Image (cartoon, one colour):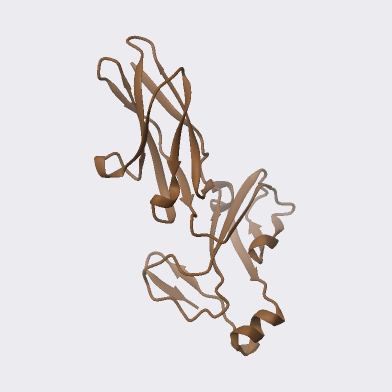
Length: 212
């Protein structure tokens, strides 16, 4: 029977532009015929790439900019030479083709349940407080010039929209987080803003609304 797994990208990776998806396949009977790559679920409309299998490890090329940005699920399906099929486990990724910058840290550890992390390329820093010490966790941040959500966003003359994803080690143990977004005097002046009126909003996915 055929078997398949997605080796790369990894779970929680941010993807931008054209990428290679590394797939491992095997079949101990008739041999592998082909593999297919899907996004979100396995239907014909969600097929994004396919390839004839050569050996047990091969690459499927995928242009991520043809799929909309946001949290997505990657799945792969392999067929053997007599028509049997097997699906891979889900790989959760974030497509960020429209992001102006992306930054990640895959080695976050807390000491006394606290860690501060600077993401200078996206004008952000985070202070994370957990209910127990964690190690080798990850956070990825993508910065956009416009909102990804359908809900009407608050006026944002500074054009700083952030998508922040944390690994389960953080999410399952998070007590609090302080998010700081940095800006310059030149940005304030160019936007014609009064610095005292600047506010941070977050998008509540449950209520599909922006909260101050």
